[in-house]
Length: 293
Image (cartoon, rainbow, N blue to C red; front, side, top):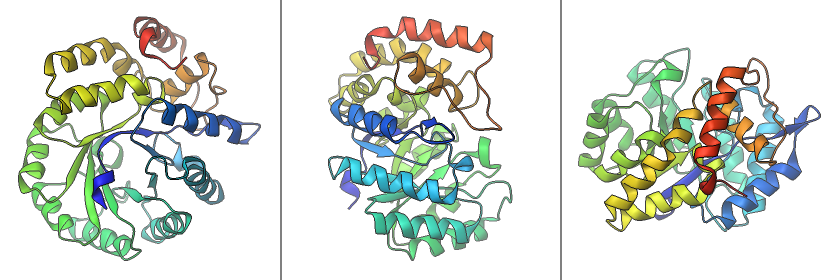
C-alpha cells in the first residue's frame, strides 16, 4: 500500500472563477501534471486553500481529482482539520471517493498536547485510509518530537509524514527508525532531505515546473548528485519566489501568468503586492525553460 508513496506529489492549487471552483481549469491542471510525469497529486492541502473551501467544495474537489486521475497516479487527499470530527468526515469521504491516502495536518490553533495528537490520529486511522502526517509548525504552532513521531508510527495506518519543520536532525531520526516514509514539505529542502533518504517531496513548485521536479527526484534516485545539485540551483529562484508571500498567492499568480488559471484567491488572502510580483516575474524568466508551456 505504501509503495505508491514515493516521488514528487504536487500540492494542487484550487482554481476559482465566478465565486466557485473552476472545474475546467482544475481538470486541465490535473492532465498537465500527469502528462509531465508527476508521481501523485494532493488536492485540498494548504496550497489548495482548504481553509476557505466550503465543506461541499472540499469533498467535490477530492472526488473530482480522484475521478479525473482515474488511477493513473495516486491521490493523497488533504483531509486535516483542527476539529477531529471534521477531519474524520473528510477522511471518510476521501476513502469513499477512492482516494489512495489522506494528508493530515496537525491540528492548528488549538495546539493539542502530544496525547491529544495521538488520539486525533487514532480517530482518523479508524476510517481505514492510509494516513500521512503533515508537520508544519510555522502554520500550526505545534511541532512533533522524535518521541511523538515514534508514538504515531505505532498507530496502524499511519504510514508517512510530510516534514516541513526544517529540521534535518528530526528527519534523520525518523528515517533511522524506519517506520515511516518521509516527504519533504519544502521544495528548497527537497534535495538535502532526499539525499538523507527521504522518499520524495510534496511540492508547490511542481504546479508550474512538474517535469523539472520529477527530474530532480530521478537524478537523486539514480545517484546523479552533480546533476541534482545543478537542477536544484537552477530552480532556487523559483523556490524562493513562490514563497515571497503566503502560499498559494505566488503560485497562483505564476499559473495565471502561464495562462493556466485566473489569478483569484479567497480572503483573507489577497493578490500579490507589486514588489513581490516583480520578484516572481524575474524568477519565471530565469526558470522559463522548466515551466509548463
